[in-house]
Amino acid sequence: MLLFVSLGAAIGFVGAIVGIGGGLIAIPMLALVFAMPQQLAQGTALLMIASNVLLTLRNYHKRSPIDFRSVAIGVAANVVATHLAALVAQDMSPVMLRNLFAVFLASVATFYIWQTLRTRTRQEKADATPARRMGFTQYVILGAISGVIGGLFGVGGSLILVPVMTVVYRFRQTSAQAMALSMIVPGTLVALITYSWHGNTDWTVGIALSVGGMLMIRQGVRLAFYLPERTLKLIFAAVLYLTVVLLLWK
Image 1 (tube, rainbow, N blue to C red):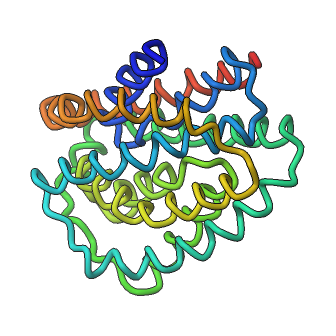
Image 2: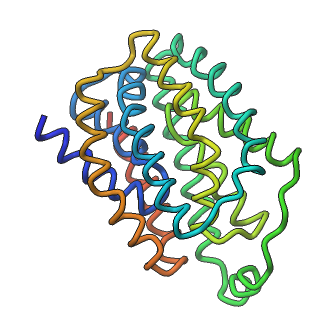
Image 3: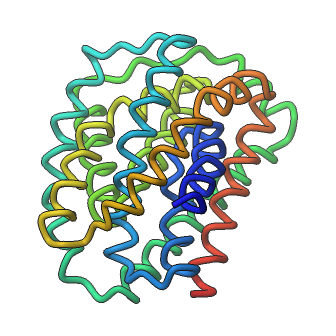
């Protein structure tokens, strides 16, 4: 139990820095080191993800207030899509599910590297552009897409939201991470219930990871607001690539 609490603390710290709740690291770790089937690893990690995302969101909201009224539109679409996708994931081959997860993460990480390493002139011009307003349709579409991803993989709904908000709508990285977390919270709880209902959750391990993660979230969020935005994006991509390596190794 002490091992899982310590592991949860390390994962929670990294997850808070990049706004992903730590599940991207916990899932391959449980599958690789502790030989859990992919569905069980995802369902167990969801326990930690749910608690860590809630606490991370609270700390982000203190530093960058979130417009919850607008986000609620995306939340509704996210919940429905998450439940349907989580049901599909229960009957998929664990190997196929793991490989799809790796391909998805590699694609997002590559996109972040491309975005961050653009020429300085283009980057400065993009940073100077004010954020664009998202409408009803945009919130519904993003909520649904993030729900499908979160339901299938148990994590990752915010991964598609953050790059879209930063590149297309010009949100700052920390603001995008905060809004993405607020949009996926209810869907994460729905996914946890679905995975648990099908017996794909180890509550003992999941609770231990949750306790450890919550101990380090405040420090991670503080570091996220201290680091330069360019550095934060590169860290985000590095975490994703590390996860892909672990998944393919398994």
